[in-house]
Image (cartoon, rainbow, N blue to C red; front, side, top):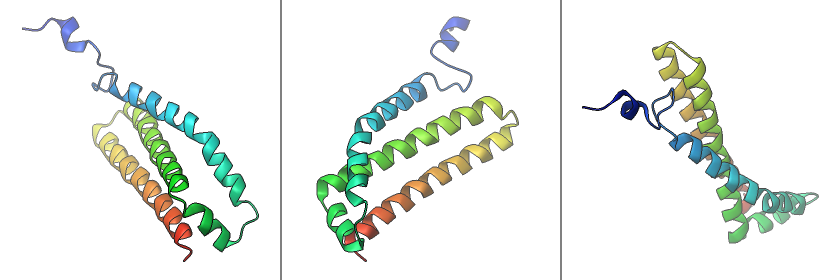
Length: 124
């Protein structure tokens, strides 16, 4: 037997607890730390032709920085939209459809961004 307090402890309205809260804070900190290197890379790309951009983006450290930023930002976006959907969409079928669409959209944005970086870095 569990008391009512034990049943609801650490669970919000979405019944997932505080894990989404901490994941969103973690991705925010990651993006905060990565924004300066990403801005430096963007400034390095200004005025370059495609061959120059490929040379810069072909560097392993720069590719890793950009990939980490893409992953952190799309994950942060996914969590934020999912929380909004769970809080404000009350029809369970519509909520499920919106969460699924949110997941697919975030994966598509991440994959398209990664593909663009890889395509640019290969110089094709």
